[in-house]
Image (cartoon, rainbow, N blue to C red; front, side):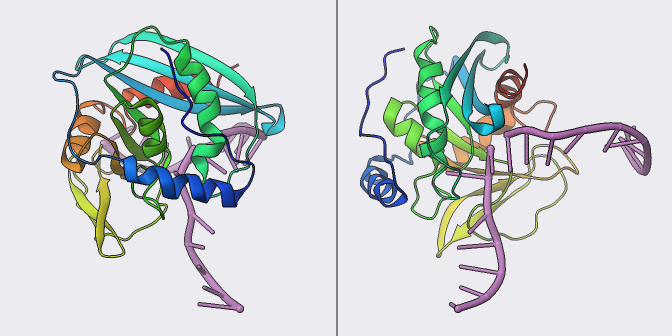
Length: 221
DNA sequence: GCGACAG
DNA sequence: ATCTTGTCGC
């Protein structure tokens, strides 16, 4: 797929904040998805050579049957450190390179990390969604910001994630008795719809099939 | 100032 | 993210 650069890539945290503050106004948190969804993609990262090389993996699956349709890999020198709140600047360059090789354009992308459940409401799912103008959902394995009530142990139960008096996402149990996931809108997907798709993509394990496939590719040799 | 902190 | 074996439980 063809990808257009929206901005120069930052060198410093200060430049990164400016980009986030600008682009966050382009994020759409209501449903604007193709109907029906035919292809769902998962994206994940791995690192090689003591972290100096970034490897991005993309897996496109059919929906709702979740069969692998296509996968790609891309490698790049790691150019930005890991700083909480700035994950996208570290990971997106390699992800875009892997997505450029994809033939099957996904209707929805599940990202490893937060969407608007972010200090400036612009996590990696938002950033990728705005760059591509494709619907995205943030699916994180741990909390970045916000608080929530305890939730019951059964699959499908969830609680709103609150930050500064705003509902920024949901804590969602995708498997009974297992640690929950942190779900938030990335771009062109509402929270309720995000929860719905994440549950449809987790028929068996805690993590969505999309990210499980991408994860294997990204962290294998 | 102190603590928290996606991957 | 990554370094790493066995082990507890369904």
